[in-house]
Length: 303
Figure 1 (cartoon, rainbow, N blue to C red):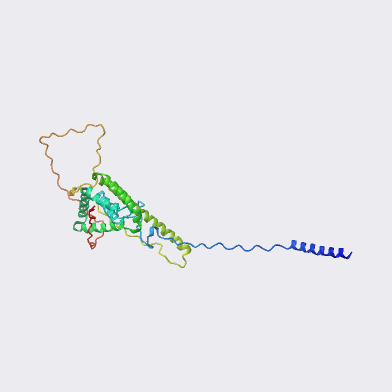
Figure 2: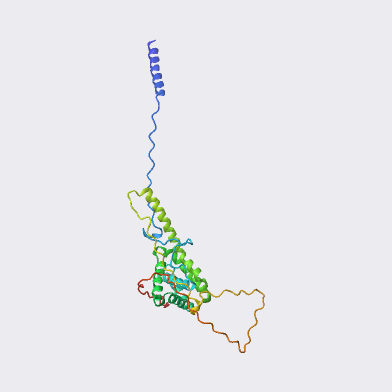
């Protein structure tokens, strides 16, 4: 039986090898690879603006301080005119519609615009005397620069076209009362831009604190100084009119109006003594007047 024994011996060796293989622990799994490195992107200014740009401070009403704050309705109307003048020069995506509207507005509302301009001149003369023109032109320069801010042009132009169309559709008698609303609407794209830029500065400061160990950036530019505030309406005693229409009558509805005075020989009315206007308190610091800026409308369309 040698063959059987040899075969049994081989089976025993195979069995032992199989048992040994089963008792060997499996190799450990390969180590987990580290997570992929994600590059942290540094925040960029909104709307293509430059880095390190200064923006105005926020006022008590939560709005950024602009040259359109504290204006009378006459000044508001003139600022609306300047804003639409900027749009006429800068907005060309709608077939020069902004320019066409602006030239039409100068023609259709020529009278009320002239009255507003004269009223603003009187306000500056009452506040600053002979230097009133220089102070007004200084503010005009600030207003033009404000509405000409390049990053906001794209969002400002559609608003300017909408406001210009609405002003053309109303009568001249409605212009003065609607001027503050139109001015606020024209300013909103700039208020939105300042808010977006302030948010960019906040995110940039956070990025700098976490990832900017080897990079130095300016995350808190110096705020713009508050722009000058135009003077208020000249007092009525100085012979200057109101900037808004008089309030509606307070007579009770249905009441009988007072009888008219007889047409013959009206009683004499004593002329009250002329009262001098109150002392003028300048709203701008004294200094050398800035160079004169001549504000001219665009030429009339030749079409």
